Image (cartoon, rainbow, N blue to C red; front, top):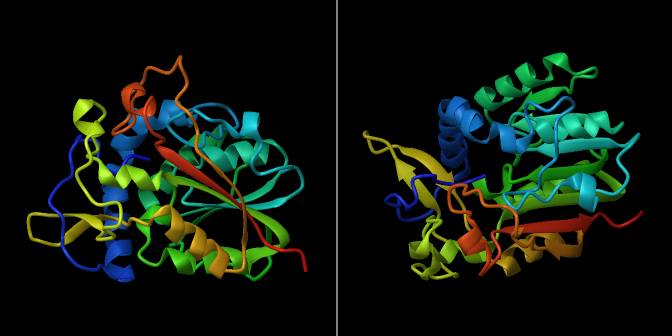
Length: 277
C-alpha cells in the first residue's frame, strides 16, 4: 500500500508516462518486491489468517466491520489489484463467488500459497486493470483495496472497464492514497507534515533503474479528478470514506503513522454504484 518505504521520494521522471511503460515498470517492481513486501506487511493484511482478511488500508478499517460492499454472500465479486489475495479469500469465506486479478505474478504466487489450506480456493488472473479480460455485466461487486488504480496511467479507463463488467445496480468500492497526501514526502515523522509539492501537480511519481529505465510509477489524481472519472464512466458516487487513525494503532507503515494520521487522512475509499437498468 505504500509507494516508497524509504521515507523520501526518489528522483522523478518529468513528463507523461504511457500505459505500457507504467504497466511494465510496475509489474517488474512488484514481482521483485513481492517476497519482501509480504514478509513485512503480510501479517497486517491477514495473509496467514485462515480464510483471509479484508483490510481497507493502514488505518486497519475492516470490511467485516464497515460493510462498504454490502451483502456479498452469493454475489459475483471481482477484486482488482488483489496482491496476495487476502481480501478475495475473505470474500470467498463469506460465501461470495470471487475472482482476484493482479498485474504481478510474484504477488499472485503468494496468494496461491496462502490459499492452499483454504476450503474453497479463489481463481486468480494475471492482468492489468486498464483492459479487464472479463465479459460485460459479469459481476455484482468490484472492489480494490489500494490495488491497481493509483498505478495505472489511464485510471479513467479503469473506471469505464469496471462499469462495463458490473451488472446494473452493482457496487464499485476502491481505496487509494488520499489525494492530499501527494503534497507531502513519504515520511512518517515531522518531515512528512510539511507541504513540498503542489496538490495540482499531476506529474507521475516515478523511479528509474541504473540504466535509466522507468522502474516504478504512481499516478496522482485530485479528489475532483477521481470523482469526475467515476461519473464520466456512468457510475454514481454514493460516499467517500476518509478513515481516522485509531487511537490504539501505533504501527508505522511507510508514510502512514499515528503522527500524520492525527492531522490528515491517509486513505480515501470511494463507494460507487452502477445505476439500475
